[in-house]
Image 1 (tube, rainbow, N blue to C red):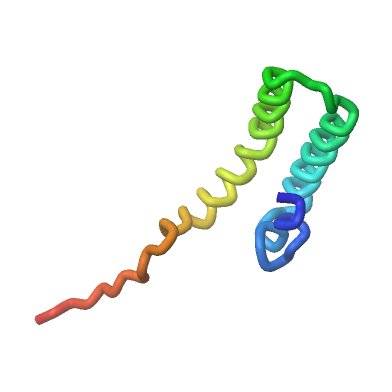
Image 2 (image 1 turned 90 degrees about the vertical axis):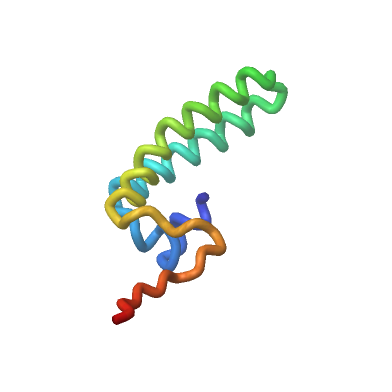
Amino acid sequence: MKNQISDKDKLGGKLDDSDKKTIETALDDAISWLESHKDASVEELQEHKKELENKVQPIISKLYKDQGAPPPEGAAPSEDKDEL
C-alpha cells in the first residue's frame, strides 16, 4: 500500500494530498506499533489491523466511487454494437 500511494501511476496519482497524508500517517503508525509490539497477541494484531482498515477503507472506497468501480479481474472490454 505504501508503494502504491508513492507511485503516481497507481494510487498516488489518484489521491488528493490530504487523503494521501492520512493513509501515510495511518500506515506509519501501524508499522511503528508493530515494531514496538513484536510479542502482541493475535487479538491485538487483529484489533490494530481493523483500526488501520477503518482509516484507509473510506478513502479507497471514495476513490473508486468517484471514478466508477474498476472492472472485475480478467473481464474483457464490452463491445456494444447495434446490429440492424
